[in-house]
Image (cartoon, rainbow, N blue to C red; front, side, top):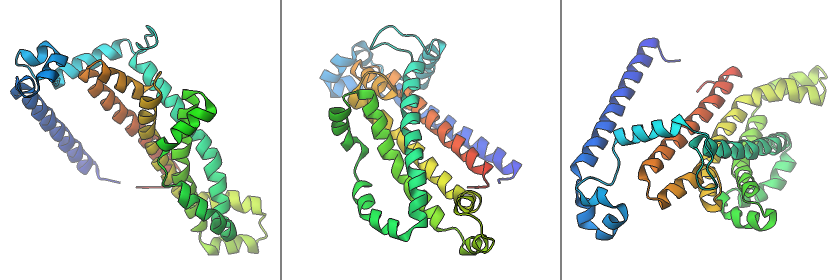
Length: 281
């Protein structure tokens, strides 16, 4: 664990880097007046008066902060299909991620456990894993839409597909890496298979399984944005695409910021769980 003084210096450095970034951002949008209109008249026509009056079309930090405060003031409003609060959009995305992720855990952890304890099963399933693993999750979306015939459930299926492989492989690796001495001692004491799996193998493999869970949740949160852009309806991915269609760059930037913050929160939640089972980064 980092020392208190080192952590304070790291926080101070992070704040300094953030201030430099915001200053550079503000300088860039303040000093770029009129260039968008001069370089691309069609772009200027789309953006309206912001481009033609000498102001940058890209919003600055103050504009983003003001708009963010407006969105957070009433995050759960619902004024129709294409006008919902940012809280509702994030809630739908999180719900889809959690459902797909939970299904992946229920499938991948037991199957990975079996693969890790059986060399025969590992060799038999390896060709299928190697073929299916590299396929982009979004490539499954047309097939999911055709068979499931529901955009929300199709997005959950895509989250399941992208989450299952890191979980499966890390679980199998963790189980297969349990020290032989521990297993031999358990067999010598005539411990039952179920008790050995629950009390010896699972605790030893838990850090590796948690690593797979952290990787999977990051991939799932990344993929849901792209999936919702394709299927539309609700969700933070749809919000990004809809605001781009409305040429609301400020809202797009805010959505990107919130996507990053939620992703960090999910990762830190699993990191905390990992520390609870004795895993340290």
